[in-house]
Structures are given as structure tokens and as C-alpha cells.
Image: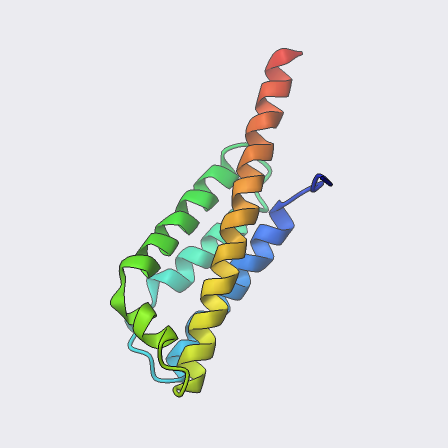
Amino acid sequence: MTSMTNPRPYATVALLIAAAGIPIQIAGGADYPTVPPGLFILLAAAGLYAVRTRWAPVVAFAATVMIAIGGIVAPELREQLAAPSDAAVFAGSALQTAALLAGLAYGAAAVRQSLRGRERAAAH
């Protein structure tokens, strides 16, 4: 198995794509607050991966997990994904979901890498 050198840029791009899904949904008529918190949480989490500290990936990953849990428990997401005839809302929801899953995977890898770096530093 090939190891990934640095998963942070991949996590960043995935979260930026997930964030882009929100305005697409809004443009399609999805019901969102005037200031959609998920958009700003995803953008902030993406930005945290650029911060070169050991704790930044942990916080970014935790924020991503919270957004994912919100999507799982929100009936709107399931309804939007079940209605492909509403093209923009469906596309934005599908894009956000797929990118969020990638963000979770790359984020978990970034956290693992960060924690392993801490273990290596403690061992020396």
C-alpha cells in the first residue's frame, strides 16, 4: 500500500468542494438560512488544514464530522438526494455529500499523520 505524503491539501480541496455544494443548492431553491453556517464551517475547516500545528487537523476533522452528522440527521438532505428531478439542488447535495466523504477520509489521514508525528517526536 502506498502511503500518502501529505493528506492536508486533499482534505482542503475536498472541503472547499463540499462548501461549493451549498451555494449550488441555494441557487436551485433549497431552503437555507440567509447566512448558511455549514458553508462557513466548511471554509474554516478547509483553512485550518493550512495551519501547520498538530492540533489544526484535529479541529478541522471534528468540524467536518459535525457537518457530516448534521447531514445524516437532517431529513432535507435525504429528500434532496431522493429528488434528482430538482437538478441544481440534487447536484449540489450530491457534490457536497461526495466531497464531504472525501474530506472525512483525507481528514482522518491528516489527523493520523499529525498524531504519528507527535509520537515520533516523543520517541526521539
